[in-house]
Length: 435
Image 1 (tube, rainbow, N blue to C red):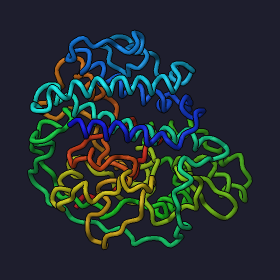
Image 2 (image 1 turned 30 degrees about the vertical axis):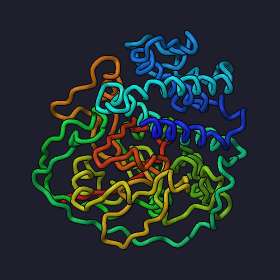
Image 3 (image 1 turned 180 degrees about the vertical axis):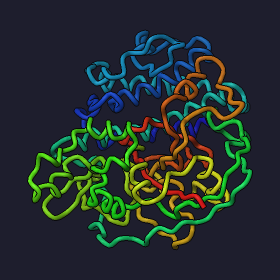
Image 4 (image 1 turned 180 degrees about the horizontal axis):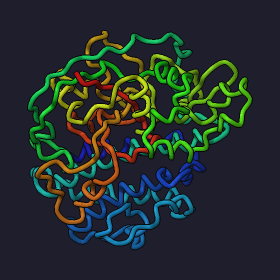
């Protein structure tokens, strides 16, 4: 475990290596934290839940860091306001790096005493902390992308990643695979690590359904955009229609007829899309690129995903349908496209049509399932019980991981969750149909 601890902690530093010192403190919106906050908060987690209670004689690096880098654990105390994390020039990046080194040194001491007892409390909490760090590594990338992607200069986070010109040929059309219905079991078995929200494993009944064999592509979503899908109220949930007006859609009735086709694109697209002349582009972590029609569409909200599904004559899958179909297909995270591959953006499908593809990695797939507790759910004891359970309200479940996730972090039972308006993560669409 000490080697794994050091490797995962080092991965966070590697993700920050392309940043300039000016990048570390920027917070472009309340949901996107500054990079230096992520580096400090993940260290705070190990200090708070492992070093203070289990390492004899441990002294906190700084007495106010418990307040400053607490995220949402009210059982520990009132956290520093989330939306104000980017207002602090101090502690400096070098001080936060010193904090990380201090925590890592003491964690090495602690882990040396418990290496033979990985199933004990310290071992289990360390494993939780490492998966927590993996979550924040993904957030580091998506928050950095939101910062740079909203800069008029559209600077690249990794300009050193070579990319060929985007293929403008549409991929194979999606097909629907009929999936087994009846009683299935979903959720983690408990044999290996899982978050508490993946438990307990339980039975659900699935009516006959079919799942798309691939993710919705940019080309397919562009058809929805060009068809005026963002301007057809019958396609949208009421909350989604209100959200559209909040992002300031151009009002078509105020435009001349010959301007409407062009002006409708001002905001009514996935996040990071834009049009320049005759061509469509999207911002990536590698910079601005021509829109690759056969690649999965990403950075769409649940509202957009649900409207597209309705326009396409389909629906979004339930999380139980997704998990059952993946299990039946023998899908494994080892087949997925994750951050480990180094592309930092979703890829077009590479498998043959008619097989369930792209289930892991590429984009988080919106489901129609509300984020609620499984029957018999029990949160972790104590303050760690705030990790997942208290967020089971007004959010939707997403499945499969993304190109910014780590392959050793994702499981078939993994349940991510976001609010329906959120789209700064690599979120995309897989369709389902009733049979």
